[in-house]
Image 1 (cartoon, rainbow, N blue to C red):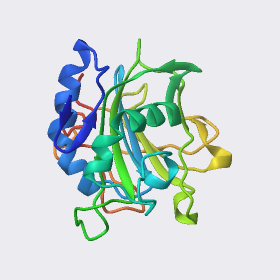
Image 2 (tube, rainbow, N blue to C red):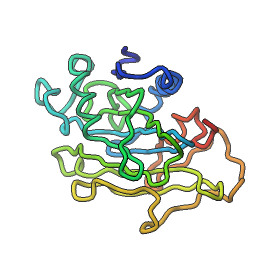
Image 3 (cartoon, rainbow, N blue to C red):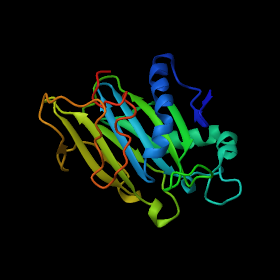
Length: 227
């Protein structure tokens, strides 16, 4: 199955189809709003909505003309190879138990002027389906590009804590610090609003350093909407 110029996992299961449709509807927005080398993981009960901008130079065997860019033809031609590398290089787990990514969708990322064409980055969207609300969620990213600017990711994770208040953690992921336990007591977690506070369905929870965000686009715009 392919959609909107992207590549959709052929392994998507029937329960993941509504999630996949949500990702497909949000896909054009994601490609424009996710900055290069940025990512988000938005937890909503048993689901984790992942959006990540991955450098093309981190992938093998997909850049036919070796220009460190990928175009629509290369994306379609190497879709299966790209999917395998993304699944191997981006891993989500709960207390060290791996969680499969469902509804994987990949698309070209426009440049800083929002121009379409051969891209230096791909935008990856997927849904992690947990058996229960994750207690110790972890992310492990192993896909790093060749250029210095492609050797780190700025990443944000959001959820509701045990008091019901939304909170966000931001971190930097590098080859030497590629695996992180999210919302760990060892790192500061930003509380976004008081417990029980209403959340505007169209509000944005942005990176502190970024004007663009995709935090709200996958969970039907409200990152804390009931699943």
